[in-house]
Length: 123
Image (cartoon, rainbow, N blue to C red; front, side, top):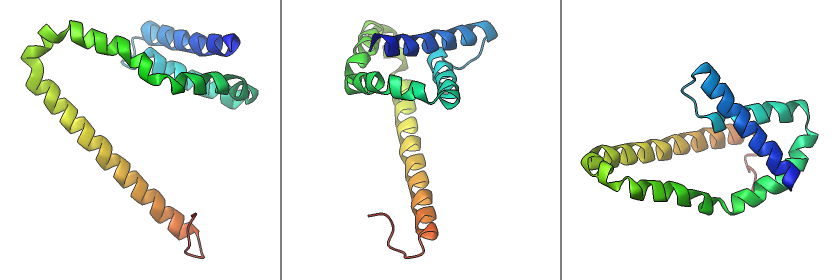
């Protein structure tokens, strides 16, 4: 488990480094995930080694939001003046996320129905 955690953290650090070095507007962990994805494509055995640790981290994902929540609470005074902007951003982004999810799901279901000659679909 320590080796897999080291691999995950190494790619996160690599992503942070790439983001900082090139001044990219993309967060380092996102770049790290893409680098890890590319590495897994080159060496599929890495996925089997990292998977149990990644699944364990996902089981406890809610705990990883505690620092973000604390940060919001400590910055509450600064956010008071931006309540309308923050609220609007939350409403718009949530609505867009739901709409995109619905459109993608509908497109995938149509595609699945089109590819299934029996018309029964995967049940």
